[in-house]
Length: 251
Ligand code: URA
Image (cartoon, rainbow, N blue to C red; front, side):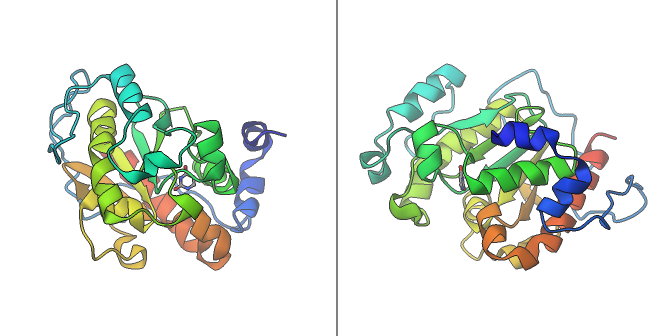
């Protein structure tokens, strides 16, 4: 059974069980008066019709004016860092290019490098289940990208140099998509999005951060959750914070 079939046939209770969360967790209907988040939610009305403004250009290779096809082909042939040497293909991202939700992982693994899509392996299955637990589905108002677009050999963490070379592509994706909310999956995504070195997911989670004017929530990377299932309860709290934050942003 494919991941997509598996996810779509799971009930919400099965999904939560799959995440190791049990049937007791319930997504509460958000109460705006409750659990106020630190980020100022009265953001200026975002102009979703225009593209490109509002994201700070970084680096000599920043592609500030590329449209999607040009971005896709630029990334596919990119040789800005040594990750290009061992890739089968670059993995730009997948999903709804007008999504309110942008999820950002670390970088493609072997499965992603082979298929050309992010999060298609075991971590992807868990990510799909996490999305389903809060009534989200990849491709439906959700876009999934990575901090680096080429597979780091042996699935090692991308270096700062690699993150810096690839950041302009992620920034361009953000400028084109204009998500209402960004979710950083793990420390590497948080580091490149916030451009900070002092990143610990445990301390950054539970708050709404500001990523160049876009609210951003940090949670654990699905691969980490597969290795540390005890942390899934915290991931569930993060999913609830995401839902509440999106609810508030849409008011
Ligand atoms: N892990 C990531 O961070 N990204 C992927 O696309 C797959 C696994």
